[in-house]
Image 1: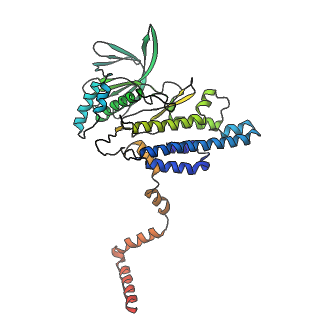
Image 2: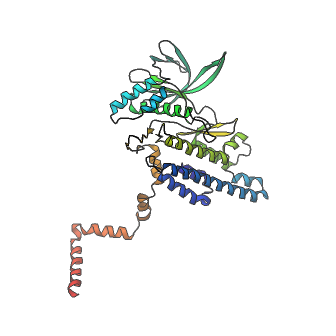
Amino acid sequence: MNLYLYLLLSEKINDVSDLVKQLKSLINKLNPLKDNIIEILNKIRMKIQEIFSQIKSIRVVNFDKGSSGSYSEYESADV
Amino acid sequence: MAEKNLYNNLNFTQDDKVILTSYERRLKLLENYKAIENVTFVGDHKIIIDDGENKIGFNNQGLIAGGKSGDQVFNVNTFSDIGENDYKLEKMILKIYRKKNKKHFREIYNQIMFHSYFSNYDFTPNIPSIPCPKVYLQGKLSDNEYYLLMENVRDNIYSCELEQFIIKTNINKIYNYSDSNDCIKNISSIENIENIFLQLIDIIWFMIISPQIVYNHCDIHPNNVIITFDKYNDECQVKLIDFGEARSLIKKTNKTFKACDKGRYASMSMNKVFSTKINNFFKKKFQGKKSVFSILLRELTSLFRKDNVSRFKVFLYESLFVFIVK
């Protein structure tokens, strides 16, 4: 999953690299036999939401920049 | 009632033979069990399953897989009776297991248990439908053969594996298809992609924390995650397939075991991605490079070789000399 998030975000990986690293370490900690599994799953979910909210904000910024330019700039910023 | 009994009997023993017989016994207890006497292939296009009393006909769409293990997976179509002369085309997968194997029983059993658990669950917006293929029929073909008839989750052109999905969305982005229809644009929207990852996490969550059935899929990788697109609601749904390696984690018994087999694709690829600790550290930092550690290591090994005994002596004499002078 993490690998494919990498692929997916390859263009914006520099902007969210810290968050992806944190997500990676959280997934490393995931062990269903331990008791803190719920806590870690919660954190992973929050982290994914955080990453995507950041990507969305990047997209909005690009859109604002692109609104003065051509339509194709907006399209390239879209995932 | 049958489901409740099954949940109570989930404690597995370690002996393989006992597991085989217990699995067989449990499969017979399930509602959708049907022992079949004969499977007939008519031409290239029809499969007839005969149970002695009734005949079930399938239009064979082709063999999907048939590898070393000998298991055959067919893509089949059939018409189901909805009522009052109304019929619906159902796309199904027929899997025939050629050997009596612990893994086969586990796959059939886990899939049925997983399906039955989620069919009783009140779905949230995050998990809009049952996140696994439905099981229509399962049972015995002959002494060593078992079959599983289940839903074909890849039943429309927009359904694909997660890996293909990512490639498709990237291609769509790179080539900037402005002419593509709304459906493709909706599939590749960032909201849908976020929804897919959150759905996946939620499914894992419910599999692990449910008090009734504590499951670990053990083989979640992008080829075993199917993304289906509901064009009426503009929603993507995640479905997990291949329950051959799934394990039930029963905490009450206090038994601990390896959660995943090391040889599986998922664990191997995860190792590649996540092996950032010792192995990668040494490979990246010290392989082919001179460093303090590598020089020290070489010196220490050389001390114990016959050729360098004299060097060791010199070293000893020097230190002795220093000691004497002091």
